[in-house]
Length: 271
Image (cartoon, rainbow, N blue to C red; front, side, top):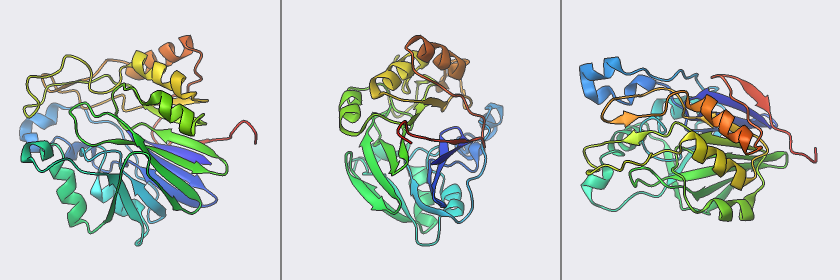
């Protein structure tokens, strides 16, 4: 298997010439574009485009705009390829506020959207794609994605909080040859989720290292670690990726920090 990190949370997995993409991001600046002039001060993450027109499926961990970019998915996917995403929230319009932009853009792009529940799997040769439990920082539907072939297992954790499903995930599907781990520990203060939580809405570096150890990650790759800081709304930990590497090393978890566009080969121990 070949893994290419696309920056922020985006990844592309290739096996025998077939690919899938997870959370690709084409226009990092579109995420907070609704803020107008205020958005100009936000440092956006560096991202690279996925391969065009090749992917057999697009996997979306959740419908926040930085993880569900319709143009990026449209570019990456073959014409007949589906977008797999978690099942939506209830009917309360307040519950849809953070999802509305991506949901509208995905629908307008004419993508074949398919909903999966946690623990549900689909087979799209040569991949088995399994939605696994995750916990979103503001309560929106989210899953982690397990991508399996006969050459290995890659687990993508989206931007989940620390939660209690790690042990079940490890027991049912582990160990994992590579785990893409969100690490920026952002504290969220959004108007539709008041009063805000003082706890991070995404795993911080120490929590991420612990999750990687519980999951039995043979290699932990930090993602979701630089960009989008907005005082009073989205406040991440500084130098999160390096802090994660330090914390994971203490816990004897092998790590590799990638730069956007970098490729690595995933090789299971028995290969």
